[in-house]
Image (cartoon, rainbow, N blue to C red; front, side):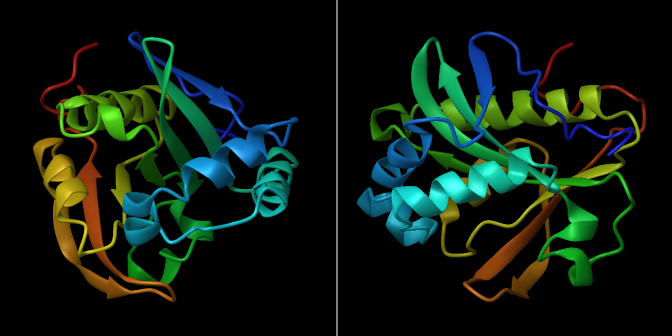
Length: 192
């Protein structure tokens, strides 16, 4: 995928670091365990066995249009993030997406790191990284469950705005969008 972010890196800056998930030993088990936490079952619903997670990562590594990452905060597991091309996603029919526009999913997988402002800080840094890495991207979109008011507020604090609710196969999603800043800079709250 030329001129897009979809490669083996996610250029977040300290205190964050990101590792591409490829289906290596233990990755599927880690996500299977973490995604079974009550709050993630309610907001994500991906209660998959380890084998399904592993297959998902292997397919993505083989050249799919999504990239799954494990994000750390100061060397502590923080979140699962998946970045994808909007034109080849469940959101494709729900908007006028450019060929390089990106979407992402995020699940904070350490409950001890929730409700501390880290989600807002990370989404701001993630958004800045995506725009930095993919100069042809004009907008970044995400689609949390509309009932997940916590992430919707986090996204609003990170310059995402509600476009509209959309019905997807597994949820009613809040389609939220952050356009590339007109100045060519980064969204508010983010630094270079």
